[in-house]
Image (cartoon, rainbow, N blue to C red):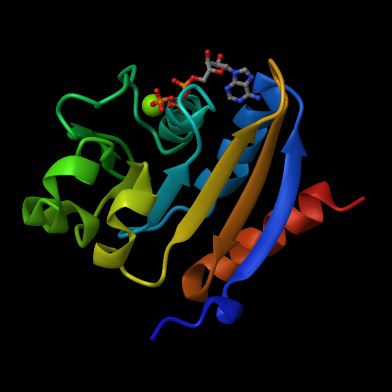
Amino acid sequence: MRNECIYLKTKIVLNSIEDTKKLAKIIADYAFSGMIIGLAGDLGSGKTTFTKYLAKNIGVNDNINSPTFTILKIYQGNYDLYHMDVYRLEDIGYDYELDDFIYGEGVSVIEWYTYIRDQLPEELLTIDIQADGEFQRSLLIEGKGRYEKIIEAINNRYSN
Ligand SMILES: Nc1ncnc2c1ncn2[C@@H]1O[C@H](COP(=O)(O)OP(=O)(O)OP(=O)(O)O)[C@@H](O)[C@H]1O
Ligand SMILES: [Mg+2]
């Protein structure tokens, strides 16, 4: 059984797109082969926007756009980026072909990860985004194991 208590977590508030860009940079600095980032939040909360900035910081030169209709898009970079949007899987169920990527060598970013949470490894970084206003976003970020140092880095950067 999953013990939620062992996840390190932090809450931060971003006030601009520039703040989202900075957060993506901090997280990208800790990128590793096999990294998994789950993103949740309502339509337009900023999941794809965050992914775009993360992509730039892991050496992806192509412009990324939302993979909603394809579920997965692959980009080459210093780490390959597997950008997934699993919104549609809420109705049709998990697609096991995604395992090749989730357990692959690149960095997986999964929009709407909560829809496939049971199929994902316990060890991942999750970011739940809430839009408070036009530019303000409240984020709950959780991770364990190899992701704990990312939470610590974010806490150091945003401690007040
Ligand atoms: N601080 C912020 N961080 C991220 N995006 C922001 C911020 N402030 C405003 N925005 C705007 O919010 C919108 C976020 O859209 P985006 O496509 O990233 O959302 P999404 O969560 O991926 O939506 P969807 O569920 O449709 O995939 C963009 O228009 C972006 O410019
Ligand atoms: Mg999106």
